[in-house]
Image (cartoon, rainbow, N blue to C red; front, side):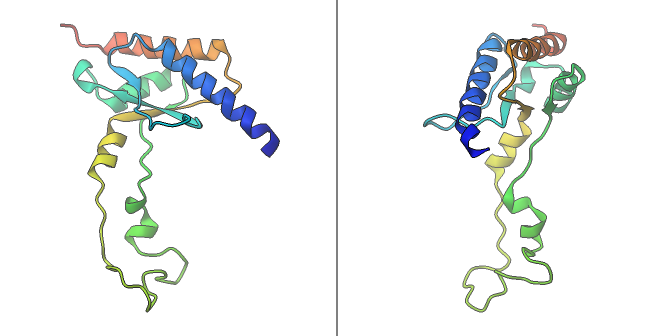
Length: 156
């Protein structure tokens, strides 16, 4: 499996680039911002929704795309400081380690709100992609995004 990984990563990057290009003309949805460097390893892609341009919210927009048969999820909210193991300080069963260790010098009740992470999650939805997506799947994705945007775009 590891021998196939570089090829799969390369192909996923190609698929992501094709999708980005295919939806480039849309107004209310665009690929999420990416960090610089060599590029992402796309197990899924994030898309930002400008709700101000739509008559529905991001969740309804994503649900409409999913109804077209496209593998999207309205939310991907996996913020470590919101996870149950962190909030309950229970990494290991029946233990308060590492917070309960005598050597632990940090604040055992510290909270880490992450408003920017929450805002990013709440304004984006995700699309699952696969390295074996062909031009047909890319076309289907772009078509569904366009159809849903046209249906919900505010008329000015």
